[in-house]
Length: 244
Image (cartoon, rainbow, N blue to C red):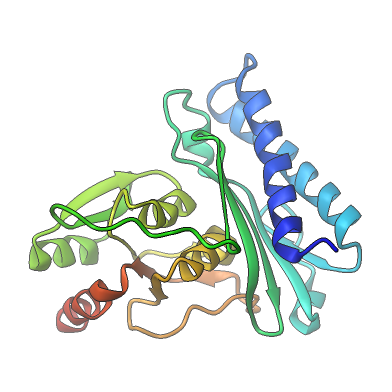
């Protein structure tokens, strides 16, 4: 029997393969990103249609089917997270997200990091490497939030600019950084699969006010999030509370 995690992994790998092949061609920049979005979406939906034909798909690259709000199983997908980074041949900080939301929670997920040739899944869960050295906080390359700077100043941490939201989340899982602090908004598909993998690895995931992250909500907008090692959750949230 094929498990939901294997379904997610197979779809993520299919999209990753397509994206890597496209990147070896003549396209660069925005045209490459547009082609990658479309090709990866097609690869994922084809795999899901074969493996779980009765399930709904909630994706950045497709019209929102509001039947998902009453469905038992919904796949939350970002076929290419980090289009700008994908279009730059020198960058690897982009990702493919495939997550299953079922019975009110994230139930299974896979995140491909094609630039590194890796796929991380919820089962078996990634093993969190031991922390060493100064604290490091992942932030957006183009719009690092003021709250992240405040947290870094208070905790003596270094800010590490990285590309896609999925890559920044998985950077915490992989031990590249110790936390990811984001404000300014994103969409549910930007973080659903990475957050599921991060939770499986034992990381803390929440909103900046400490409340739970909610997925398959009617409004796809997610205003902010924190992903961090569990021992850093209270220090980070305390700085946020003090600033507000």
